[in-house]
Image (tube, rainbow, N blue to C red; front, side, top):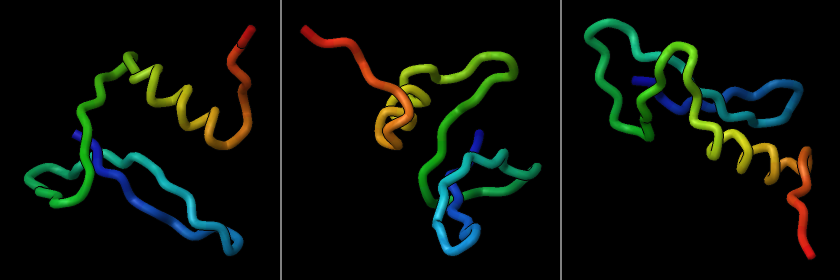
Length: 58
């Protein structure tokens, strides 16, 4: 399980996913992540929100 955390870098708040430590419980947003397998749709949406990709349209 990974937890969503926020860090401020150069005055900009960024969100990151960080693995839970052994025995750690976390009450915020979490998701399961597997080595070598990522949640592609979630990553694409984050890139889209940041304006880093454009989806084709008619």
